[in-house]
Image (tube, rainbow, N blue to C red; front, side, top):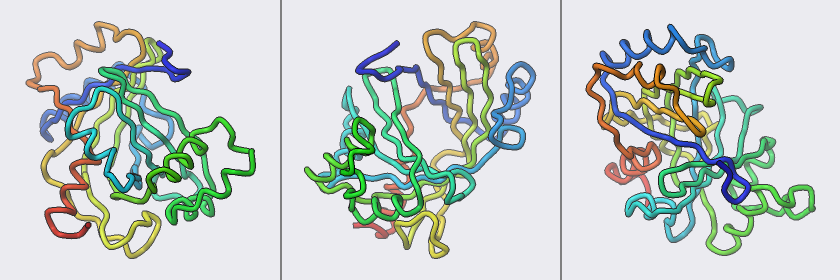
Length: 237
């Protein structure tokens, strides 16, 4: 499904215990392929989430706004060669993303709130242009660093992606996720989160993989969990 030139996907989240993850990992691996980007589909994800002076992304998530978005810069296994600027959109029950790869120099420029490199015309129509407008209106700045481990399984039928996310941590003492000074603080609200994502349909045989396990859907947000972790420790303003 296409909405405003973005491909919409279904996304559902289920908090899970370590024991449940072991069962699901075995089931997923039996019929789905591991993500090719990591050994056995495993890799580390670290993101700097950006928010404006009104904390729009944070507040919209808390109130459950039907339409909302959040900007982030994501990297994999803390590589400065895999920096991806993204905007994730929520449109009622559907999600979508836009993104673009950026250089380390552009990454640091964005952390400073300097989007002047976008104005060259090279990035016209990209998500960076949208972000520069948002920055001009309400000052986009780093809000929180989110870090976790992911194991991903894929199936081409329905463009299905099942992920097991665990080891959630909030980065403190720096807004730069690439800095050696970042201290990662465990977020223990959830042991793990199972995410199920697909385009137009989810094959029944894949949905059956969740059978017999007591999972309850939740709108858990890693962004909110890590933000609140730092707030509880008085490590953010």
